Image (cartoon, rainbow, N blue to C red; front, side, top):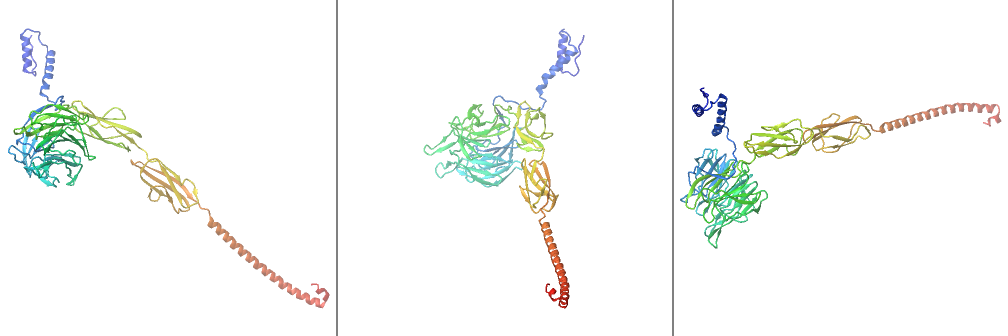
Length: 589
């Protein structure tokens, strides 16, 4: 029986089917053909890698040669802005100081020439702040040191000038920490041969104010060191000092550490060898473990060693060497991938570029930071966070409960009164799990409890009443209203003066620190003892009594007067009678 292959299978599959048929083997049935097709598909598809790119894990460090820099040179400045690398100034095989600016795009592996720096110079220091590149100091000729501060804007491809560095010098690095750019050490002009001397100067530039300040000096003055920033600290590795007695440069293995927050110096584990004019850079922990790498340099001749420093363990280890040995090179890191550029190989200035992938690249989990809520009390909560890179899944756990998937900031509804805790988890494309900080916060759904101690629901004889109250929590607003009048701000217990006679009601209003409002009302009255009324009654009574008494006296006096007159008439009559009738009898009266 003839077996017909499917129309949509590949030619290779078709040949396999025909071969089996011709050899007299058992014919392949249609189900078996389907299984073979599926197996072949699963085998071929991964070769084409049609899916979107994912993060790859690197178990060992590796070097890759990239497109060479167009201008072979060394002693230049190097910086990265928006994923593109800029190499500025330097010197070449003719000892010419350069103003060349070349841009490298790691994605396309291509170089582009940009607008040249206004002042050609070598041995300069560069740093990035707010998307702009600051180029400081350097030399413009043999032992001619400058402090120029020129700023390059990659967006507009233009240069501007700001306040110069107070101490003109070269052979140093510039390091940005927060809002300051730190220019430390290096070499400056000396009137004594060889007309240069190392300096311990520590000058900090503020790009926001265009001002300079001096800080604690470098303990051991060196030039040609390698430097790297880890957190708020700057590491200064190696370097050289000119010896007047020997007439030679003395190399050092110092590892000097400057804490920018407290303006203090300390020492870390010394470099394994005395070295200078190498280059250092730190990975950030973005995609690779946070480490400091030192490349090349001069130690009894140019070399290609690569050393790695672990700031936590305070230890050095040797990793895979550079393909090209060199000193006076530049190094920059983007997304924790390092690019070693140019330099001097002992004979020639080179333009070679090598990409260095550090060990452990791709094993770092996403860094997630909860920005809201904070360790505070809320009435309602918005969950906000930051992640240092893309993730394939994110979710939060509230109070240890099951994860809830999220794709962006959100609001947490239905939270109960009391304490809570929240944490966010994030997965990248290779399964690295990032865990955020755990935030403890509280929910307060109720307003403050107001307890009015005085006045209470009773009558008072005084017109001045003390308002005394307590609250069970801090408040952001406090006021009272008497008898429905406009609210008056309260800042504590007060006295309510000159209250009118009669009934009153007093309400205290409070708003807590999360916006919950409450109020408490009491009813009371002012009923003073009626001293005035009583006095008035007494006075009136006295007046009435006095008037009555006077009237009584007056009436009595009139009555007595009438009787006297009548009596006088009677007496006169009687006296006359006596005279007439009986004289003896009258005398008895």
